[in-house]
Length: 155
Image 1 (cartoon, rainbow, N blue to C red):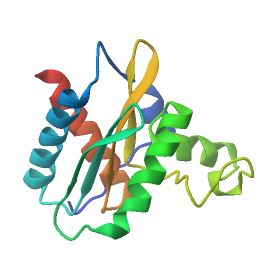
Image 2 (image 1 turned 180 degrees about the vertical axis):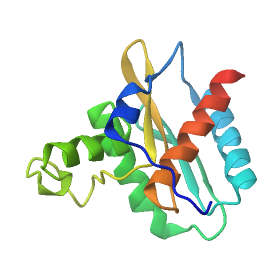
Image 3 (image 1 turned 180 degrees about the horizontal axis):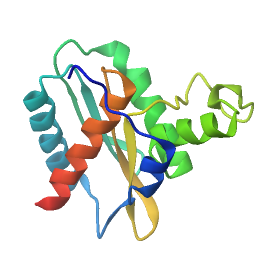
């Protein structure tokens, strides 16, 4: 990917949240398999992690990703699940307000990372899990996670 995708605050706010009728381990693995296909098609160096109810159900590390991606996968997912919004949207909201996420004193910045790449998954209006990617610029991480969800929802 030579040109990085651009996501404005408005773009991200218009994106509908992912609401499923159920999201269990089998669904998470199926979503993970779609993610691996998208990552391979795009020739990216990405790690993907799927959470269900606080449990890591699926992890794959493609290309040059490795243990260094783990804090990012965990930290982005914590942001998406806590705020109930994609981690990139959380970052963009803070930037637009002129109050960078990193300046908040009510979150553990060693644990939470407001960078693009994690999207929460809802069931009955409640966060049931997330898909998170790490390894490329965060807008690429977000774009790949969003494309994975789009394809998964089409099936």
